[in-house]
Amino acid sequence: MAPNDAVLAPFRKQGHDHGKCVRDALTAAEQVCAREGASLTPLRRRVLELVWGAHAPVRAYDLLDTLRGERRRAAPPTIYRALDFLLSVRLIHRIESLNAFVGCADPKHSHGGQFLICDGCGAVAELDDPTIARRVADRARALGFTPRRQTIEISGRCPDCAADG
Ligand SMILES: [Zn+2]
Ligand SMILES: [Zn+2]
Ligand SMILES: [Zn+2]
Image 1 (cartoon, rainbow, N blue to C red):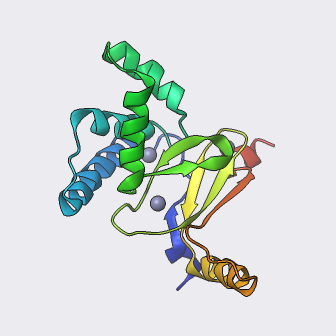
Image 2: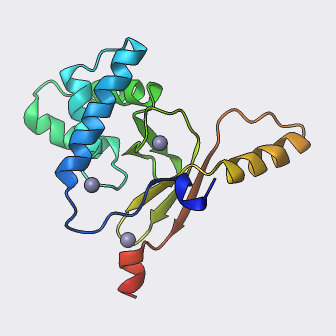
Image 3: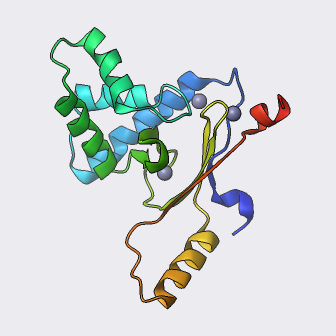
């Protein structure tokens, strides 16, 4: 596999057609839910749309703030249930180091992943490089460890922030 095939989501330029990103994500979500026999309720759909607000991790309480302005009954358990659902059908990923969520760029295929997270602007790129994943899993197994789920989070600077110094 060529290295670029492993890129699920590159860093996006300012001014790209983000509306299209969101529309594509919602279309993919409908397909994934149909395939899994799961229901993308209006609330789940709205939470997914909010997670896709930018290509950067979103925290649950930020979602709650937005939803409280829209729905009077939005309470933390409502948001957490919706996020749990979206995680279970792999439409979003949890970024553990930030306790936040990003939309998955390729929800139709189950994958682990490597996330590049900018500490300047919060932008996230998503890789799914099987060479990296296999190497980590092999090292784990050599220690008698059975890997279940593998997510690698790397912090640093995105191209825009690196250019700004
Ligand atoms: Zn976008
Ligand atoms: Zn993904
Ligand atoms: Zn950045």
